[in-house]
Image (tube, rainbow, N blue to C red; front, top):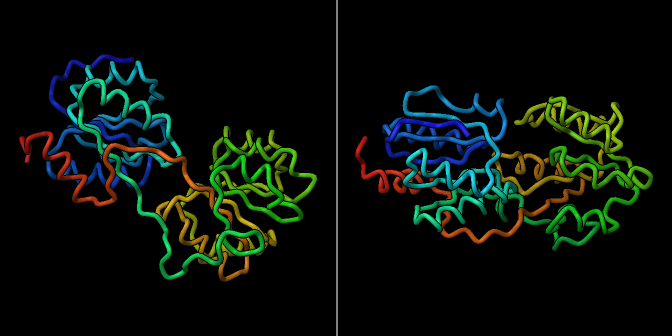
Length: 275
Protein backbone atom coordinates (compact mmCIF):
# COMPACT_ATOMS: atom_id res chain seq x y z
CA UNK A 1 0.00 0.00 0.00
CA UNK A 2 1.40 3.38 -0.96
CA UNK A 3 2.34 5.87 1.74
CA UNK A 4 0.80 9.30 2.08
CA UNK A 5 2.61 12.06 3.95
CA UNK A 6 -0.33 14.44 4.03
CA UNK A 7 -1.74 14.78 7.56
CA UNK A 8 -4.95 16.66 6.77
CA UNK A 9 -8.11 15.14 8.24
CA UNK A 10 -10.27 13.61 5.52
CA UNK A 11 -13.48 11.81 4.72
CA UNK A 12 -13.17 8.36 3.18
CA UNK A 13 -15.83 8.04 0.49
CA UNK A 14 -16.19 4.41 -0.58
CA UNK A 15 -17.09 4.87 -4.22
CA UNK A 16 -17.56 3.27 -7.60
CA UNK A 17 -21.22 4.20 -8.12
CA UNK A 18 -23.03 7.14 -9.70
CA UNK A 19 -24.25 8.14 -6.24
CA UNK A 20 -20.68 8.38 -4.97
CA UNK A 21 -19.80 10.69 -7.86
CA UNK A 22 -22.67 13.02 -6.95
CA UNK A 23 -21.62 12.95 -3.30
CA UNK A 24 -18.01 13.73 -4.22
CA UNK A 25 -19.02 16.71 -6.32
CA UNK A 26 -21.27 18.09 -3.58
CA UNK A 27 -18.63 17.65 -0.87
CA UNK A 28 -15.87 19.21 -2.96
CA UNK A 29 -18.08 22.20 -3.69
CA UNK A 30 -18.11 23.03 0.01
CA UNK A 31 -14.40 22.41 0.39
CA UNK A 32 -14.29 19.08 2.21
CA UNK A 33 -11.14 16.97 1.62
CA UNK A 34 -11.82 13.42 0.43
CA UNK A 35 -10.14 10.14 -0.25
CA UNK A 36 -12.22 8.01 -2.60
CA UNK A 37 -11.62 4.31 -3.10
CA UNK A 38 -12.69 2.40 -6.22
CA UNK A 39 -11.85 -1.07 -7.48
CA UNK A 40 -11.16 -0.35 -11.18
CA UNK A 41 -9.07 2.21 -13.06
CA UNK A 42 -12.03 3.06 -15.29
CA UNK A 43 -13.98 4.26 -12.24
CA UNK A 44 -11.55 7.17 -11.81
CA UNK A 45 -13.35 9.01 -14.59
CA UNK A 46 -16.49 9.26 -12.42
CA UNK A 47 -14.87 11.92 -10.25
CA UNK A 48 -13.76 15.52 -10.82
CA UNK A 49 -10.13 16.57 -10.61
CA UNK A 50 -9.50 18.56 -7.43
CA UNK A 51 -6.60 19.26 -5.07
CA UNK A 52 -8.97 18.20 -2.28
CA UNK A 53 -9.55 14.79 -3.82
CA UNK A 54 -7.39 11.67 -3.97
CA UNK A 55 -8.66 8.53 -5.73
CA UNK A 56 -7.31 5.11 -4.74
CA UNK A 57 -7.77 2.03 -6.90
CA UNK A 58 -7.57 -0.94 -4.57
CA UNK A 59 -9.53 -3.91 -3.25
CA UNK A 60 -9.09 -3.58 0.50
CA UNK A 61 -9.10 -6.37 3.04
CA UNK A 62 -9.71 -5.64 6.71
CA UNK A 63 -6.02 -5.29 7.58
CA UNK A 64 -5.45 -2.88 4.70
CA UNK A 65 -8.45 -0.81 5.74
CA UNK A 66 -7.08 -0.40 9.25
CA UNK A 67 -3.76 0.77 7.83
CA UNK A 68 -5.50 3.03 5.32
CA UNK A 69 -7.63 4.73 7.99
CA UNK A 70 -4.53 5.60 9.98
CA UNK A 71 -2.27 6.68 7.11
CA UNK A 72 -4.94 8.83 5.46
CA UNK A 73 -6.11 10.50 8.69
CA UNK A 74 -9.67 9.37 8.07
CA UNK A 75 -12.05 10.87 10.63
CA UNK A 76 -15.34 9.66 9.09
CA UNK A 77 -16.44 7.13 6.48
CA UNK A 78 -19.22 7.65 3.94
CA UNK A 79 -19.99 4.32 2.27
CA UNK A 80 -21.56 4.73 -1.18
CA UNK A 81 -20.36 1.41 -2.58
CA UNK A 82 -22.58 -0.82 -4.71
CA UNK A 83 -25.32 -2.48 -2.62
CA UNK A 84 -23.98 -5.92 -3.62
CA UNK A 85 -20.37 -5.08 -2.65
CA UNK A 86 -20.98 -6.33 0.88
CA UNK A 87 -17.40 -7.32 1.69
CA UNK A 88 -16.01 -3.78 1.59
CA UNK A 89 -18.94 -2.52 3.67
CA UNK A 90 -18.56 -5.28 6.25
CA UNK A 91 -14.83 -4.64 6.58
CA UNK A 92 -15.26 -0.87 6.74
CA UNK A 93 -17.87 -1.20 9.50
CA UNK A 94 -15.60 -3.53 11.46
CA UNK A 95 -12.58 -1.23 11.12
CA UNK A 96 -14.59 1.87 12.03
CA UNK A 97 -15.93 0.10 15.11
CA UNK A 98 -12.42 -0.86 16.19
CA UNK A 99 -11.09 2.67 15.75
CA UNK A 100 -14.24 4.50 16.90
CA UNK A 101 -14.59 6.28 13.54
CA UNK A 102 -18.09 7.48 12.52
CA UNK A 103 -19.60 5.51 9.62
CA UNK A 104 -22.60 6.36 7.43
CA UNK A 105 -24.01 4.15 4.69
CA UNK A 106 -25.48 6.04 1.71
CA UNK A 107 -28.11 3.85 0.05
CA UNK A 108 -29.42 4.55 -3.42
CA UNK A 109 -33.16 5.07 -3.51
CA UNK A 110 -35.06 1.88 -4.28
CA UNK A 111 -37.77 1.40 -6.89
CA UNK A 112 -40.62 0.69 -4.52
CA UNK A 113 -44.32 0.20 -4.86
CA UNK A 114 -44.84 3.46 -6.73
CA UNK A 115 -46.56 4.11 -10.03
CA UNK A 116 -45.73 0.70 -11.51
CA UNK A 117 -46.33 -1.14 -8.28
CA UNK A 118 -45.71 -4.81 -7.65
CA UNK A 119 -47.39 -6.98 -10.22
CA UNK A 120 -48.67 -9.82 -8.09
CA UNK A 121 -47.02 -11.37 -5.08
CA UNK A 122 -43.86 -12.78 -6.64
CA UNK A 123 -45.32 -16.05 -7.87
CA UNK A 124 -43.97 -17.63 -11.06
CA UNK A 125 -46.13 -16.61 -14.00
CA UNK A 126 -46.49 -13.06 -12.78
CA UNK A 127 -44.48 -10.29 -14.33
CA UNK A 128 -42.42 -9.58 -11.25
CA UNK A 129 -40.50 -12.10 -9.17
CA UNK A 130 -38.40 -11.13 -6.15
CA UNK A 131 -35.72 -13.61 -5.09
CA UNK A 132 -33.24 -13.46 -2.23
CA UNK A 133 -30.24 -14.80 -4.14
CA UNK A 134 -28.93 -16.07 -7.47
CA UNK A 135 -28.65 -19.53 -5.94
CA UNK A 136 -32.41 -19.50 -5.43
CA UNK A 137 -32.86 -18.73 -9.10
CA UNK A 138 -30.45 -21.50 -10.15
CA UNK A 139 -32.10 -24.09 -7.91
CA UNK A 140 -35.67 -23.30 -8.96
CA UNK A 141 -37.57 -23.88 -12.20
CA UNK A 142 -38.01 -20.22 -13.05
CA UNK A 143 -35.85 -20.31 -16.21
CA UNK A 144 -37.25 -23.47 -17.85
CA UNK A 145 -38.10 -22.82 -21.50
CA UNK A 146 -37.59 -19.07 -21.20
CA UNK A 147 -35.56 -16.70 -23.36
CA UNK A 148 -33.66 -15.02 -20.54
CA UNK A 149 -31.61 -11.83 -20.57
CA UNK A 150 -29.16 -11.41 -17.70
CA UNK A 151 -28.25 -7.82 -16.80
CA UNK A 152 -26.38 -8.67 -13.60
CA UNK A 153 -22.68 -8.39 -14.45
CA UNK A 154 -20.38 -11.22 -15.41
CA UNK A 155 -19.39 -12.70 -12.05
CA UNK A 156 -22.58 -14.72 -11.50
CA UNK A 157 -22.93 -16.01 -15.08
CA UNK A 158 -20.99 -19.26 -14.40
CA UNK A 159 -23.79 -20.25 -12.01
CA UNK A 160 -26.07 -20.66 -15.04
CA UNK A 161 -23.70 -22.65 -17.27
CA UNK A 162 -25.83 -25.81 -17.00
CA UNK A 163 -29.01 -23.93 -17.86
CA UNK A 164 -28.14 -23.44 -21.54
CA UNK A 165 -29.67 -26.84 -22.31
CA UNK A 166 -33.02 -26.00 -20.73
CA UNK A 167 -33.46 -22.38 -21.77
CA UNK A 168 -32.07 -19.79 -24.16
CA UNK A 169 -29.77 -17.44 -22.31
CA UNK A 170 -28.49 -14.00 -23.27
CA UNK A 171 -26.32 -11.57 -21.33
CA UNK A 172 -25.54 -7.87 -21.36
CA UNK A 173 -22.10 -7.16 -19.93
CA UNK A 174 -19.62 -4.33 -19.77
CA UNK A 175 -17.45 -3.78 -22.88
CA UNK A 176 -14.36 -5.14 -21.15
CA UNK A 177 -12.21 -8.14 -22.00
CA UNK A 178 -12.68 -9.66 -18.55
CA UNK A 179 -16.49 -9.46 -18.78
CA UNK A 180 -16.75 -10.84 -22.29
CA UNK A 181 -14.29 -13.69 -21.70
CA UNK A 182 -16.10 -14.70 -18.51
CA UNK A 183 -19.45 -14.73 -20.32
CA UNK A 184 -18.05 -16.86 -23.14
CA UNK A 185 -16.54 -19.28 -20.63
CA UNK A 186 -19.97 -19.54 -18.97
CA UNK A 187 -21.48 -20.78 -22.23
CA UNK A 188 -22.87 -17.55 -23.67
CA UNK A 189 -22.06 -17.55 -27.39
CA UNK A 190 -21.12 -14.36 -29.24
CA UNK A 191 -24.56 -14.01 -30.81
CA UNK A 192 -26.11 -14.01 -27.34
CA UNK A 193 -23.92 -11.27 -25.86
CA UNK A 194 -24.34 -7.50 -25.90
CA UNK A 195 -21.55 -5.35 -24.47
CA UNK A 196 -22.31 -1.78 -23.43
CA UNK A 197 -21.69 0.36 -20.37
CA UNK A 198 -24.87 1.61 -18.60
CA UNK A 199 -26.95 3.67 -18.55
CA UNK A 200 -28.78 2.07 -21.48
CA UNK A 201 -31.30 4.34 -23.24
CA UNK A 202 -34.81 2.97 -22.92
CA UNK A 203 -35.32 2.80 -26.71
CA UNK A 204 -32.18 0.70 -27.12
CA UNK A 205 -33.19 -1.52 -24.19
CA UNK A 206 -36.62 -2.04 -25.74
CA UNK A 207 -35.23 -2.94 -29.16
CA UNK A 208 -32.72 -5.35 -27.66
CA UNK A 209 -35.48 -7.22 -25.81
CA UNK A 210 -37.62 -7.33 -28.95
CA UNK A 211 -34.74 -8.40 -31.21
CA UNK A 212 -33.89 -11.33 -28.96
CA UNK A 213 -37.57 -12.06 -28.23
CA UNK A 214 -36.84 -11.97 -24.51
CA UNK A 215 -39.47 -13.48 -22.23
CA UNK A 216 -37.62 -12.99 -18.93
CA UNK A 217 -35.07 -10.48 -17.65
CA UNK A 218 -32.91 -11.07 -14.58
CA UNK A 219 -31.61 -7.98 -12.82
CA UNK A 220 -30.39 -6.79 -9.45
CA UNK A 221 -32.45 -4.54 -7.20
CA UNK A 222 -30.36 -1.56 -8.23
CA UNK A 223 -32.82 1.32 -7.98
CA UNK A 224 -33.27 4.02 -10.61
CA UNK A 225 -29.51 4.70 -10.97
CA UNK A 226 -29.01 1.06 -11.95
CA UNK A 227 -31.82 1.16 -14.51
CA UNK A 228 -34.31 -0.89 -12.50
CA UNK A 229 -37.12 1.57 -13.18
CA UNK A 230 -36.60 1.28 -16.95
CA UNK A 231 -36.64 -2.51 -16.78
CA UNK A 232 -39.81 -2.47 -14.70
CA UNK A 233 -41.45 -0.15 -17.22
CA UNK A 234 -40.44 -2.26 -20.22
CA UNK A 235 -41.37 -5.52 -18.54
CA UNK A 236 -44.88 -4.19 -17.95
CA UNK A 237 -45.06 -2.78 -21.49
CA UNK A 238 -43.79 -5.90 -23.29
CA UNK A 239 -45.26 -8.56 -21.02
CA UNK A 240 -41.82 -9.77 -19.95
CA UNK A 241 -41.27 -11.47 -16.59
CA UNK A 242 -38.80 -9.47 -14.50
CA UNK A 243 -36.76 -11.34 -11.89
CA UNK A 244 -35.24 -9.00 -9.30
CA UNK A 245 -32.49 -10.36 -7.08
CA UNK A 246 -32.58 -8.58 -3.74
CA UNK A 247 -29.29 -7.32 -2.26
CA UNK A 248 -27.74 -9.22 0.64
CA UNK A 249 -29.10 -8.18 4.02
CA UNK A 250 -26.70 -5.88 5.82
CA UNK A 251 -27.04 -4.41 9.30
CA UNK A 252 -25.57 -0.97 8.74
CA UNK A 253 -25.03 1.07 11.93
CA UNK A 254 -26.39 4.21 10.24
CA UNK A 255 -28.06 4.60 6.83
CA UNK A 256 -29.42 7.45 4.71
CA UNK A 257 -30.64 8.02 1.16
CA UNK A 258 -30.69 11.78 1.62
CA UNK A 259 -27.88 13.78 0.01
CA UNK A 260 -28.20 16.68 2.45
CA UNK A 261 -28.00 14.34 5.43
CA UNK A 262 -24.84 12.76 4.02
CA UNK A 263 -23.27 16.19 3.51
CA UNK A 264 -24.23 17.25 7.04
CA UNK A 265 -22.61 14.08 8.41
CA UNK A 266 -19.33 14.95 6.69
CA UNK A 267 -19.47 18.59 7.76
CA UNK A 268 -20.14 17.61 11.35
CA UNK A 269 -17.13 15.36 11.61
CA UNK A 270 -14.77 17.74 9.86
CA UNK A 271 -16.00 20.47 12.18
CA UNK A 272 -16.96 22.72 9.26
CA UNK A 273 -13.30 23.70 9.20
CA UNK A 274 -13.19 24.12 5.45
CA UNK A 275 -16.66 25.56 4.89
